[in-house]
Length: 389
Image 1 (cartoon, rainbow, N blue to C red):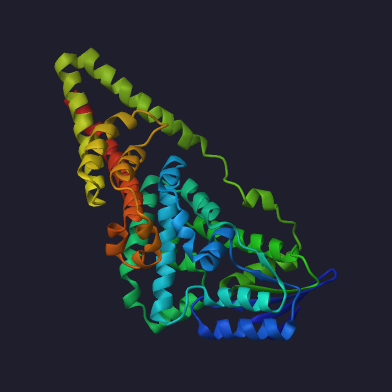
Image 2: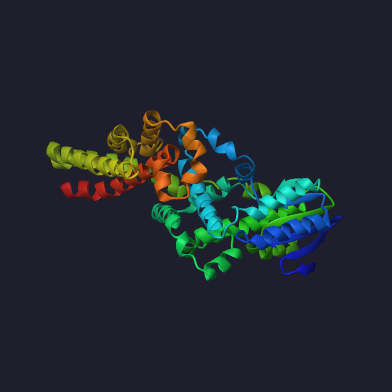
């Protein structure tokens, strides 16, 4: 391995020559370095730390206009899309503060590579898979903390100082945003960084061409070099799919509704009709009101709020349906996003007000906050029901 400078490493594998270029996601200097290296090296292929969805968001600005919100809800991907938008917002606000385009070094890599006649090879794992793997391992309160931190990040960019910027130049954008959650859940680092290091190393090694320039965030370079030096084979298929749901999670998902139904029967059998009826009322009040409150916080349509109040006590007893799906579809029916909402997404996601104002993102907020309200309502309802006995 030859070091051209601190940011550029020259690697060889079999008959391939690979120039590994570590960049800062928030640096104009990195963007200029990318252009210079590609023009000097004239590679057959340029690998970039982008997945297909992020590549499309860079190259096809109108892609948001094709978003089918109803399909997103039915596919149970509302939180993932909302998370993706929050991450995009965070990166855009940092870039705006530093007067650069979001992901400018990757944009320059693609444009310069194409101008030089090189292939463009996408080397990063799909962000949806990364976020899904994170979501799968987190508990309810960790998910709540993650959502809160991501929303609050929208208002924190103005407080970033030079020290924070220097730190971000050496970190992955995802790692920066989720650093606080990662302190209490170390396995996040494995998914956010270590897994992607292995994935990037594999994709770079197997990229077509004899001479390859690989443009990745500086924070990934040590991990990629480690994978390179150990020479271990990467099970790429295991990194591209969701791990099976934990048995305890699946057990809890089905046993919670069953346990609540048993509690109802126990109330009627031992406490009589009055006690059983009171338990049902507490269930409907706690679950419905808190789910409705979640929809209200998301500034949902009045009929959407009503639908969440009615649906939550029933959907909480059915592990296959969530209250947020009902309220989200209801909101989409009464306030269907217009083309202008989807066109304005790139600008609206730059502020908290924009997230609530835009009909598309508001629907996502309705789904997420209704589900959170219903989940909290379930936890509140159980001790209230037990107290009746």
